[in-house]
Length: 356
Ligand SMILES: [Mn+2]
Image 1 (cartoon, rainbow, N blue to C red):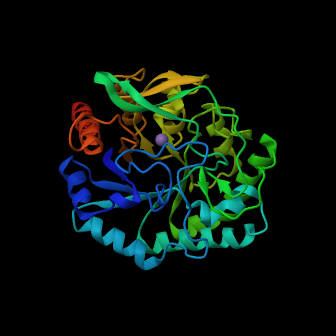
Image 2 (tube, protein in one colour):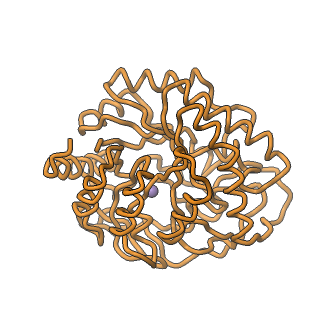
Image 3 (cartoon, rainbow, N blue to C red):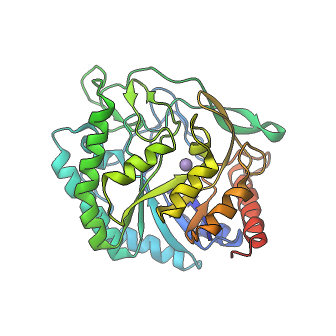
């Protein structure tokens, strides 16, 4: 197994690449969407939470990530001894009508195909995505973690309807007419996901890029009056069974799975890693489950992280583990300290398992 660090767009700097390498990482998972663009949530040293108005503005629908941009990212990481293991999350501007089955769907599917082809050309082997209308919404921040560390949590669901022009918790059209998203059935959303996979996976296979699905965060059955797809561990299997392509994989979030009300996180790790379907892993800890949970330090939650790693090793998972989120630590660099703490724990755990 390999250690990696997820970096938000603004954090893709030579200094942070060096920081990751110093923490023992060999890989970076890069976010190219600027979640904080013009949003109310301006603290870019933490994960975005935001309110019902979303995180910020999506990017330019007519400006896809260029081959040059991807190649220069790979080059900048390589200069510090790192690989780009994956890009995490499509820009809502590039696929809102894929999620909504809207009039620009065909054009946007073609755009996503172009992105996947460019990633293959740049040598980036995985695209993480979260097929969701509400996205990561309805979370709160507080001094929830050990030693009053600031962390993210959930206290019940969010039934606020999504305004027109917003998708995936970002605004893609600030001039959208007043009103809210029409309600759709769970079957309809599953059908949209199936069509997305059926159209993209042949291109992904050709390009040598895996598509990796994140489960719903937070994993409610519905959020903001929209259905969710993977909100119980067994629903990951439903997603895999939609398309048997070797490129149909998982961005396996141990934290989100531990927050789910059914099943068992260790069984889920075993079930999906045994099938070889894990592209990369979000390794984080949590206390509680839906509808009320708090993110925790990696050694301080409900999940026995060492047990998870032992299962992954037994099933020969040799991909990348990243901390995903951590509580913020009380110092001048709260985000970096939290990540260094999690990565140090993970590195020691892997050495214990003699798997690094
Ligand atoms: Mn995650």
